[in-house]
Image (tube, one colour):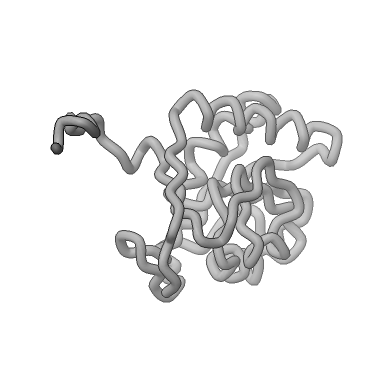
Length: 158
């Protein structure tokens, strides 16, 4: 797997604001039947989008494709959804990186509309709607993957 030269920490406030912006962008596109959240990263954005679009029909597709910062094969832990072929459904995830995960999800629901908060160039073809593009060599640190801890001051290491 390629290395990540840059890091991009994201706060809870940024996720909330960007998820709301995603909902606003999706508002005029369609009256979706419901939302399919891609676990785990898509759960938080999907909840916020569902609230903003006043949607109550939410399901999940459960996928594993990362181990730490390394990509692994896409593994479906749960792939049965109410969406069937995805017609008039919205798939929400936090990020599209290489596109492999969403490509696999799309194979289950080819007619669904796919939306993410963040998109990297290699995966953009798998997403119809996104908020922010980041470079391929950037690792995004989501708030649910981080913990607050003491950091030594820069000048304290002399």
